[in-house]
Length: 565
Image (cartoon, rainbow, N blue to C red; front, top):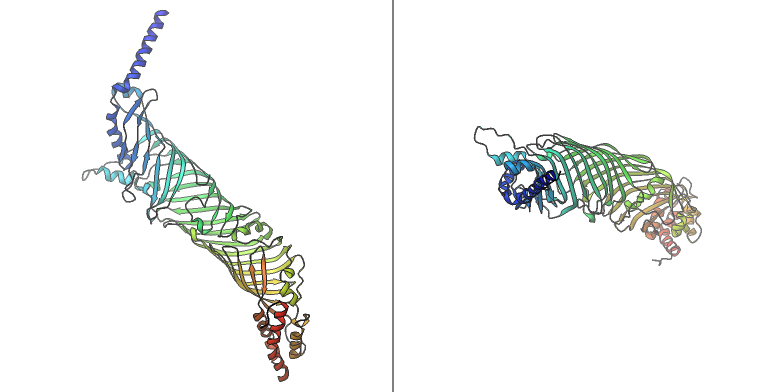
């Protein structure tokens, strides 16, 4: 027994000695040119390794550094650099026959730079395939198959990826990049998982299969994977210009399938705390889109198939097209909505730079919209028509807000404002909103029409005219003389339409609007609205009407505490 134990101890000691001395006895650096050559042939890029060392206990060769060159059409700087590279090897063939059999490759702390040119082509497109064939330069008439790099496991550990364009110095950086590929081969399909931290604290994860590597363009390599993005801050992502006003947090769950250069993506994207114009405020409710897109990698163009946008129970339908070949993605998307409940939309309005008046809320009504979203995503412009029907703005006393105009017209809207109809042609851009051909039918007030803007600081500038439900002749002093003149001129209004047109302006902000009467425009509007009634009166009455604007302006000026002209 003791003899057997001694033999085991001696053998063990010899093995430990061999393992301990082997790294010094095996000239592992002689494998470096071979590894660099095979890797360069497989990738079609120049690969350089630092000094190699051998760890028999770890079963690996280690390089102090690694560098993979970029496509010279994109950059003279490396495509990838890393502080260290570990190559898993089979120990016994290496020790006893000096044969290198690679079992795995691990690149630690890599720094990868991905660039695209103005046509949308990426610098990784020429990895392998075409570049490798060019590097091999076979003799005339000879046919050399592409080099195949195959390992059991390939990993990128705790790396960083920088994404940008060749015609811009702006870059986006993603940290803690991890990629694991099992049974990797350039000539067959292989499992792949990837993850990274996104700017602003978001996370990215991909899990699926890829390959075989396309021998002409690596960006055309087939891929079938599940994609998950959580908490992506689009303002911090680097893909959009923050000065454009677009902001929000994106969560994405999708299936991505790529074959023959066509990429189909289906899934759901949620945008929380959305901000769509400068000067707006983050939306209080998320927007979700169930989408279906097809993208042509060769043409850098895509189609958004019929998709659904939801805000609460309010739904709209989307379809259109987009291009990614330039500095920013350019879209042309159509949005159509019918009978969207206003109550569900209220919390989203701040994202559009619209804040309801203090204390007011939308408690009834539906919204219809037909809009087009067009242009680069960093300068997106939305145009189209919007209609709001059978609505109620609770907690908003228009008569009180229009105290000056209300005193003249006798407006008593009460604590709630009923809105029979409100329609407008809308233009929304990063610098604010513009509303043209605005028409509002308010049963307690009359018909309003006009146009105006809401700028990036939420300031209102609207010029409006109201055709009031009550006749001006019914208004109490100090404008009773005006009514009297009109009554005399029109014979009590026979054949003339009731109501008075009153011009006014809306300033302030959407949260605190200010209704300002247009004194000069008011007098002119009054008599213009009654012009058709004057023709049937006598000359004497016509003279009185002709004199009326001066007196009217004085009376109206006194009513609004303006200086009389």
